[in-house]
Image 1 (tube, rainbow, N blue to C red):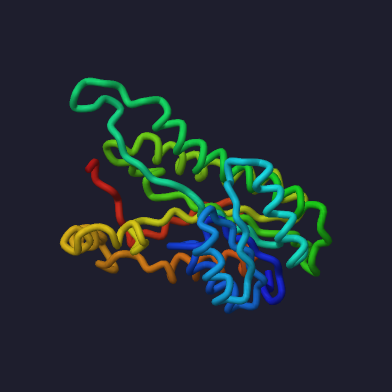
Image 2 (cartoon, one colour):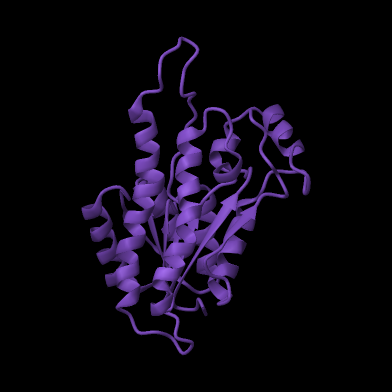
Length: 254
């Protein structure tokens, strides 16, 4: 896909991996809509890159439908969707006091990371399918953000690993389902990246985590995630696959 003047949406685009993806998409000539619950941060970034900011809760269908309408009115039918919105959380299934994990703790992460992401995908896919294909027969590209935790979930990561594992498992069937319409689906599974959440950790903890990565022995850069998202959009042969972006990292149990 040639990204010049194409309409793109990045969920969770106001910070972290999403924000850098927004910047690189804009640099490539795309018209970017930033979907985020933090509308102030989204507006600041939109002003920086010449995009638009749209308040959106991906778990709320009405919110997503309204956000898509605003993006469509501003930029036309969406051609690229990058799903970066998500939440983390770690809690053992049985705590130190012997109590079971509250079901709500599990449900919330699944609701946002899996169901929320699928909610956006299904609505965007319908819009892509109804659009006119380009000269190569392509109507759109959808990218999800999985995680190495999908494969190497650590102690206490049951909910997070399950949500990201589900996104990895969704990739191939979604690609097969939408291939007849010229829509590709891919997923990126990042390892340890230097995001705002990571910045909150003490420097010695960051250094210890970086040392666990075989090579390069540093935390991943958001620019590297964004560069891969752009390459996926531009390389028509990439479809139905999950790409680990982790420096050969395999997470230990804890």
